[in-house]
Image 1 (tube, rainbow, N blue to C red):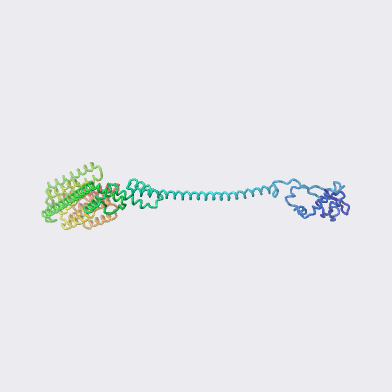
Image 2 (spheres, one colour):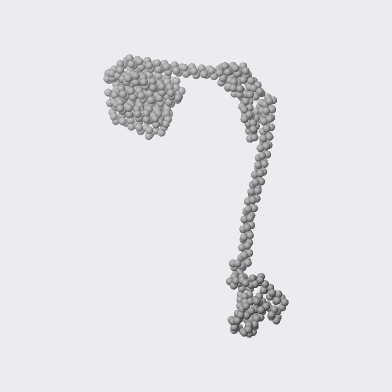
Amino acid sequence: MLISVSCPCGQKWSFKSSMAGRTFSCRKCGKAVSIGSSSSHPGATAADSAQQDFTHTPVARDLQRKPQSSSADAGRSTTVVRPAGADKRSTRAATLVKTPQPADPTAPGSPVVAIEQFKTRQKKSVSRGGNHVVVAAATCIGLAIAAAVFLVVQNESQRALKSSEEIWNQANDLLNAENVPAARKLFKQYVASWQAPNRERAEALLAQIELATSDDVVKQRLASLDDAQFQQCIQKTTLPDNDVTHPVLIRVLAASISRNADAATKQREDIKARKAADEALAAARREQELREKEAAEQAKREAEKKIAGGASAVRRLLGLNQGERKTLATRIAAIETALNVADLSSKTVFQQQVGRVDACIEMTGLLALSLGATPEEVEQISNRQVLADITADNVYQQLAGHLNIYIDMMELAAAKAGAPTEKCESVRRALRLEDGLARTVLQQVSSRIGGVSSIAALLAEALGADAAQLSVIALRVSTNELSADTVFQQMVARQSGIVFVLATAATAQGAPDSTVESVEADARRDDLLTDTAQQQLAARLERTFQATTLLAKAIVEK
């Protein structure tokens, strides 16, 4: 409803009833005019009066005091309220009255946007609250499961403990009733249980049952006793260690001892017979070695009788006639040919090593003959090869036996060349000591290669080789031995010393330098052409044979 207000200038204005109580400036005269209530209007009704009374309340005034730039006014349109009786030209003096229009629902601060924001906040709150609820529920479920598992494990443990106690009691009852097989079965079941408080006692009883009921164990224990203990056990029907303590098992063990006494006696006799046979074989071998040693000493004494010293050997060497020289040269060529054939027929590197050692022995024998040894002396040493092959059980024992013969032959050549007897004997003593300390046949082989190297150095020194050069070779060999990681590498180092010592002796006897240098160069090159230490040892034995051949030829042709 509109309120009509008259200005003192006579101009009339119309306002909405909500504007009652306000003051406005007349657009015509500019004076301030107060807007009266609707009750002062002649046509005002009681409802209009009530509405006017509400308009003047503080709540109504607060609702009417909205900022002009608020978003609530953004969607309002203006309506021109003209004075009563005014024409269109007085429109400028009219009062602009804002009437509500539908607002944009997407505008910021609109009710629609506010409601959507409220819903979003509610969803987030519910989501966060839901996550907490899920976590709490999962925690409760986990605790419930853990409690259930704990109760199940506890109940199972109690049940297993009760079951194992029943098994333990039943097993003891059966054992006391002398039902040993059934008791053993239950004791094994008890030990396998994860709840077994008496596990150690059960295991001890099982061990006693095994000892008392096993005939093989009883016979083995009886056979391992000495005679006095055996007789005492047979008389008392018990074992000396008192391993069986249960009364029932003591009776079972006594019956087992009585039952197996005869078998144990026979087993003890067999053991004694084998032991006696082993001792007899060892004694035979010791006796054989003693005979060989005595024969070697006898041969050495005979050689010393025939040769007065180095001077007589040189005189014998100078006394070689043309026929002897030709014979020795022919035999040297034959040995070289035989070695080539043996290498072709060798199927393994071990057979190749043995064949080359034999060739070195034969060539050293010719060297001894050229230095004045008799054919009988050389033949006496060579004949022992057959005995060495018979007593050897494997190829390395065969190699060790042939190396002993090689040492004897090299010593014979050194003696004929004039090497001092006391130095040769010193080498022999050192070799026997090292042989005695050797724990394996491979260590014996290495020891005997070292013996050949030491006597070869005495031979080279007696033939006029440079002592300083021999010392350098010995030092190099010692250094290589210290750096060797295996016994095979030690063998190769010592065999290399033999090659260079004999090459030095050949040079001193007038062998061509180019030939000697070729042998030494081949010895150094072999390491690059071989893959293993065993192949290196076979190659070194071949170079040793070549160096010995050069020395023998140089002496024969001199």
